Length: 239
Image (tube, rainbow, N blue to C red; front, side, top):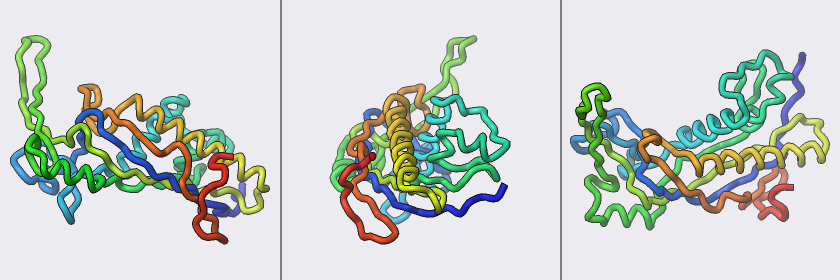
């Protein structure tokens, strides 16, 4: 079946903040992330050594939560018709030859200026901007602690800037009503994924209490961009 040509109708730009309610760990290799003698360092920016949250980590978590919520975790799509029914593929793309490019862009999340200054000046951090938590595992047979290690994480209270862009891309000959309906479905899927994240965790070791987050300011797009017009505030964010 020949595919119809896609067309970008508009971009919806979401901007907000992500606050850590518990410490967050997004790991880096020890060679690339090491500053001090920790066993498991976090990922840091090269320019200023501040920790950050990669957009790929946020997007991957949102995608996996949405797939799980819609029972698509183990689903494989064999044709275009099956792929078109997927709520997850509609926003995140994929599916090989039966899918399409992702309609969602997730930027890397950097510390706000205020949060970076607070962490840099804090006497409670063990390393620049971060804390070190000692962890071990318990042998359930012997009841003894094993494999002690030092884990670097970003402390609770840190705030990051969030930016996500939804590309409203549909078939080039789609009607205005079809485009509006697609936009509404994409926005609802994004909000659903964000709500799931608020009640889950980001990064690693979530079952141990790491990575609980609060998300603010992402309820509606702050800008809309069409190929023909300049940036404009949305009159009605989700039609």
